[in-house]
Length: 345
Image (cartoon, rainbow, N blue to C red; front, side, top):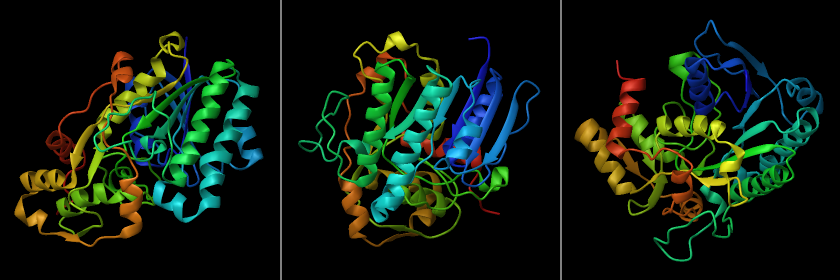
């Protein structure tokens, strides 16, 4: 492909901003369009890539018509209402996670057939595993334990079928199920609280049930208190922001023929850790002072949602397709401090 014209939806969130910055750095795209319900911040300028930031609602037919043009070569679908918010407001979750996604896919298959779509889904599509520690693969039948997981699974199925019919060229990546929250507020000068699920992110909490998992690192490292709403014995399947962005770029470049099992779905590699291990890592990096800023205050709705997510995966398919494995939790925290600092003055 001679040049790339890329669209990122949900681009005001942390992953959208990090992805846009990475795309600008690699300088392979001719144009990058960032869109969200609040106008996204632009990444640092590049002489080789034109970046356009657009505010709009994907539920609007008129906006989709203007946004989804025939020159697009790659579309990263990152928009979404997160787990806790989707559970609290069913209609909103359906509107954003299902209806808006279908509208985008249907417009694209008409305007630019065969365009490559990278869709970020979630391991929450599975629901609880058959037994604790059972290693799930893409071959296991999903049975979501939350509305968010159900809505993502429906969109997965539609994109997979459109890919089978060669209407679109889908790449469906299930992100590890951890925190969600906006990141580049201080660094890039934006305050849009949109996001996806990844550990660790600076910023303010969002509607994800897992947002505490960033909070128990982010706030103490900034010298602020944070609430832990679940048991320390709870396990999570996590991944670092750097690895997520690296794998999204890799998903963009995988040839269609590499998906030999007929499914475009991939569980991205991650690491299983307990909350207790996360707190130990916090102490190792931030000291006892940081640990003492954690307040344990159990919240039944949050714990119920998070407990429904599986925590052990066999990611052989992803590794065979060349997706990168994540590093240790300690390395993730060191990377976080290197990239964003502690926020202390």
